[in-house]
Length: 264
Image (tube, rainbow, N blue to C red; front, side, top):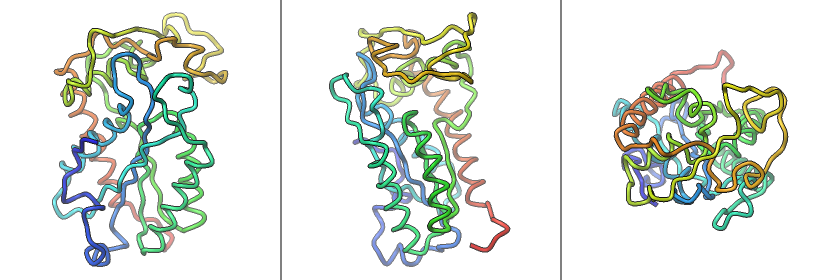
C-alpha cells in the first residue's frame, strides 16, 4: 500500500529501545481506521485507506519536527457490511473491529503511553470509533481523541449538494485520488447517484437526518456511488488536500497540547 507517512513519524519504523525512550506522558499515537470496500466503477477498493494515509501523512509533515506524534499501522479492514454484495468488499463485524481496537489500546496503555487518537476515514466505522474512545478511556485511563475524515475542511468551490450527499466515491474522494494516484482512477467509468436532494428535504432519509432508516448500499445506490464524481479534477484535489491537512494538523497539535485536569 502506498504511504505518505513521513518515515520519522512511522511508529512501526522504531525499534523497541527508541519506543522506550519516548516521553510517554506527551507522545500522541494515531491509530488510523479505514476500510477495503467497493467505491463504484471508478475508484479502487483501498480508497478509504489511501485517503487516510494521504491526509494523515501530509498533516504530520506540517508539524514541528520535535512534536512527539507518531502514526501507528492502520486498521485497513472496517465494518463495511453496508457494501456487502459488491465484489471485493472485505468487511469485519462490529465485534471484531472493536476487539482489535480494544486489544491495541491495551498494548498502548501497557507500554506506558497516555494519549491515543482514533483517526477514521470510513463512515461505517464512525459509531464504533465513538464507542471505543469512551471504552478505552474507562478501561485503560487513556486520553483518547476522535478525528474524522477531513476534520471539517471547507472544500472551497464544491456545491452544497455534493458536500452534503457526495460522501462515497463522489467529487471529493475522486479528486483526492486524481491528485496523488491518478493511475487508480478510471475517469471513463463515472456514475452518479444521490440519496437525497437538498432542494427537496424529506423527514426520513438514510443519512444526515434526525429520522433515518437502515440501508445497504445496493438499496440506494446500484453502482455503489453516493455522489457525483464528474466534476472531479486533480487541481481540486490539491486544494482540498491542503485545506484538509491544515485542519488535521491543527487538530493533532491541539490534542498534543491538551491536558486533562485529572492526573492520568
